Length: 308
Image (tube, rainbow, N blue to C red):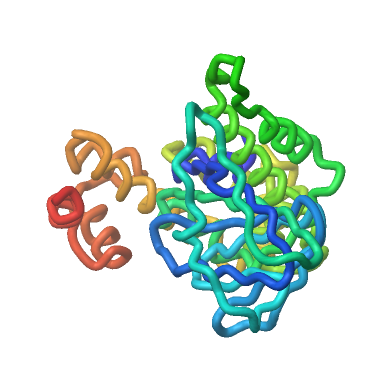
């Protein structure tokens, strides 16, 4: 299992298609900020622009996937100076699983774009989210998941047919595949010689080490053992990891274990002692001290307040 897959799995990543819009210029849509549900846009035909509150406009063409990791407010449209329509006003309740298409704008050039929602446990997705640029733009032309999704959007209700069973679930799974394809392409496009989590995923040795510590975080890892498994000496792995990731291996592993422990405290009835052992701590006291330094409160208080 690779580290990207493990982060998405632990963070309970999910996505869905919520809008299928054909817009005629001039048009503009305002998308509000949200730290709960994120928005992603995929242009199927034509062109448009996207701009965040603080950034420059990004031009999008057919096949372009645009994702804002921080969930910030933004505009999308053929002209960002046009009167903006709120995203909420475009939403339609699906009928028998069918995603109703939306028309927008006047009589100018047409653009067809679809909007996704995505959500995840953000504190568990932090290694990925903080490593991405403010606006991720990836071209998915020719990608199989994009073809599957556009085919799935054609599953519409007719007067004589029974509702297509599983249409909504199918779109959700296809949206997730498209999203993962875009993230994979973004990682692969990271220039060699860089630093950070994306660069680590792309590195032959660091990528393997990340896969091991993400896939089996509770194991009693040593740098020597990790080095042996990825094909480097202890010193070579320690030096390379610090150079690429910007921190020592065990600093990274400790932070990931604590993130998993925070989620375990909320999602299970395990005792704090048990969670501490899973996080690699020999005593609940040492675990509590490390947890408080990271999350600002002891494990017992974190569990009680977050559950409320």
